[in-house]
Image (cartoon, rainbow, N blue to C red; front, side):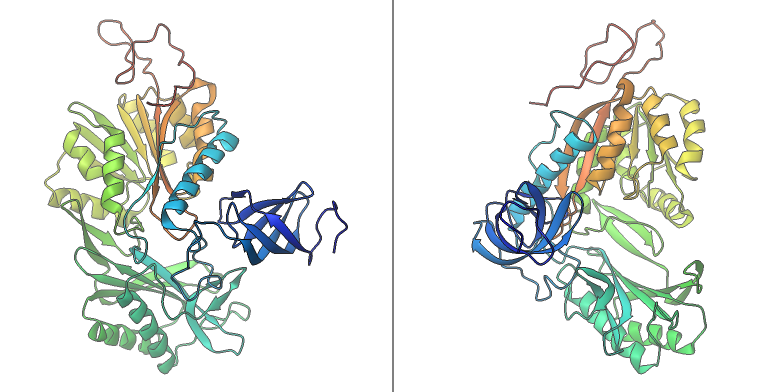
Length: 488
């Protein structure tokens, strides 16, 4: 045990006051002025903590006993909670989860984006608290006895795959399909991947389940090879679960590089309906992971874009057109870009099915396409929904300098969002007006954000005046003003 007032050491057991909740779901405490992140503890609690790891600026620990319990502590509904690494906030009531995520977004905007008074209104839970996911991936591995396992990564030991009986983030039928695939694969002699020895065929099973149509698509990730048992498994799966419309395969070589994809049975896509639009979603295209809240997210995004007659909207990372279709209905023109050929092809079909003729879809890398698109015309708004890693530097700089009235940034990672917002606001390029938090990932620390930035057009109109953002006075000069006040 460390002496009183000394920096904690690995193995120490301390009684600490939990002051805050960090992004990632760990409680924040201090021991002799040293920050300790405590797994399983909540703000307002007093807990007995074992120190597991000590770094130069902080320590990590595990809650052994809660001495004083927070009124917001909740009994985790999942039997695997604490062992499985998928969820990290089940011990916190749902409303408190949402409130905590909003505070974490505010903290990141202050620290990473340099915004003194982040304009983040109150957040509220969206969709269902469990069984909400559109898709889940389950990995194959070997248990300590060498048996095959199709499950999820163990908390604290992500290289280890643990068997699960039920994941509450997916509907029961998806859990039944996962268990069936695990049993049937083993009965067929299909071996799980042993990453250390680089042997075994089976790597991952992905399950996609459309709520509106009930269609299910299964994606098997494997090594190279053509075992006939894979085709038998796909055939038997569709017979056992009639809602399975397709089983597809993605192959990887021994160096973990993608090396091909094929259809084992049925088709390589499913259909999901959102807000009256029937959307084709291919196996290899991104779709919003919260099936029960995709419509609510779309409504928030469209309200933030605020498309109007005569507007020209540029959308980057459009996917299958989830946001594109309703924006195009209200705008004059939409140009939507995505690198995935499967996604762009599906988006074109989805637009045609919806009777939308004023949307143009381009299969291009956003960083390569953006320069030419910005030279085509002055856009009224730019909508981006990039991967978790955020926007490329070239994209950020082009958008920052573009004479566009509104930039709408949809993000599932508040850290990369804050980083990118700082660059977009650099030199007065854009002004942050609002960041809306949507809790699309209950039971986990993840949160979806929709940010609105506003800029000033610097091009002259026919009468020599300068265009300003909607609802804003015409500026006296060409330089943007300072950070706007929080909306009332």
